[in-house]
Amino acid sequence: MVNSGIGEDSYIPKIVMDGKEENPTLSDSLEEIDDLFFQTLDNLFSKSKVSPQEIDILVVNVSLLSPVPSLTARIINRYKMRHDLKVYNLSGMGCSASLVAIDIVKDMFKVYKRKFAIVVSTESLGANWYCGNDNSMMLSNCLFRSGGCSMLFTNNPDFKNRAILKLSHMVRTHFGSNDEAYECCIQVEDSKGYLGFRLTKKLPRAAAQALTINFKVLLPKILPIWELVRYFLVYMWRGKKKGPMGLNLKSGVEHMCIHPGGRAVIDGVGKSLALTDYDLEPARMTLHRFGNTSAGGLWYVLGYMEAKQRLKKGDRILMISLGAGFKCNNCVWEVLRDLKDPNVWEDCIEKYPLKIMDNPYDEKYGWINEEYLSFIRLEDCVFAS
Image 1 (cartoon, rainbow, N blue to C red):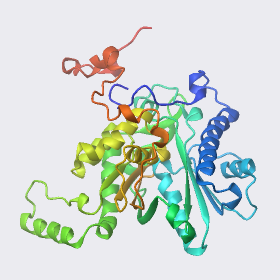
Image 2 (image 1 turned 90 degrees about the vertical axis):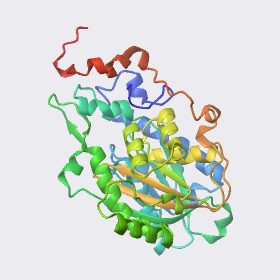
Image 3 (image 1 turned 180 degrees about the horizontal axis):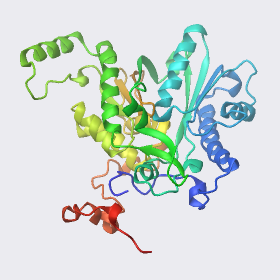
Image 4 (image 1 turned 120 degrees about the vertical axis):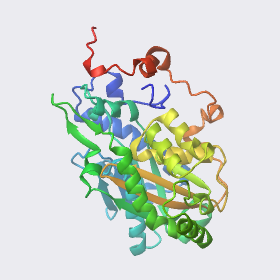
């Protein structure tokens, strides 16, 4: 927790607050999901003035809960949606599932014209809260928090003047054929039978490899030709010499929307892509305020940019998502008009960015990072209660 980058205002499931995480029920999980689904959908319908009966395509992604009837069926039943609705229910897709869902909508729009689609992205955490003491599985409790979002899409040109973003490019990469990448972020039971999510030290490497594969396809689509030529010439001249000679991503996009998966993930992506503190600020502040909300996290980052009035007409946003599998799904959005809605950040945006990021656990537990204690192996210690 000392190193997590998460503040004290993030949200955990009610079942955990009530101390029932060791014996969760299906009702507890559905109550948690309903809170996230229906609050975001009610706001979406109210704000857009689009009726639930006008929706033609519905895609829901929740990785760790797959009941019968499906989660999409719960939404259809609640809003009494049409019987000819095209429905997709995604599970097991991890933190990058939101862009998988949007890619499905994109492909559907090629076949069905003048339609409305909704994507709902969230996660079920309460029933998957780890109750054991395996270090690699306890990490998920430190990072993951409750949150989610609902998004409305259309390919109807009549609504062009009301749209705020346009999808320009989408590239999906699945690195699951690599055993190390497949196992670095996985749901398992520990030796005592406790179910949880294991995050290993191999995760940053898997993320870097997947991101590299993805960028080989995506960057030629978004960077100007002169930047690609410059990179090629520098590469040929320098050969294998050490030192920075990377592409300048800011020549093709103005904003970086990075999945707030954890402090190490954000810092690692920032270092690899030579990004500034300004570029990383939205992801860092999102992690501090909301934590890692899985597939919904990207939209909290985007919301921060909008609330800070960074997004101007014509700007391009590179959205980078990483998730179990291992997957790297990236896309580019074009901003269609100046954006300034305070959205979910309305009650706190004025205090961000924080000048001091003191962790609330530093005072009590910060000693664990002291250099003079580095010779101690915690697994060899016995702590008395």
